[in-house]
Length: 107
Image (cartoon, rainbow, N blue to C red; front, side):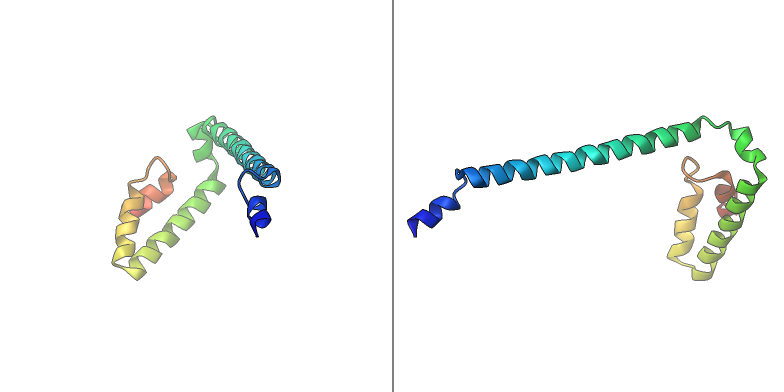
């Protein structure tokens, strides 16, 4: 009927109210995500403050990176083809990967 069509119209106060609430919910979700990203950025920037020499001095971290770099190298070699190309690409990501990966995958 004609009255049902008016209730589903975009000018219906109920529909406008629901849309407004939905937009507020989306905005709140986006604000929460932005806050989480800001906290993650702070955590990452605090890692940048760690001196490179301190990182190398930590033999435990170095050993973990080295062990996993060898695992990755062996995975690439065993699977061949595209995996070797991926390993070569990873070896060039010296800004993202620890030195252990770069030196191992470059071999």
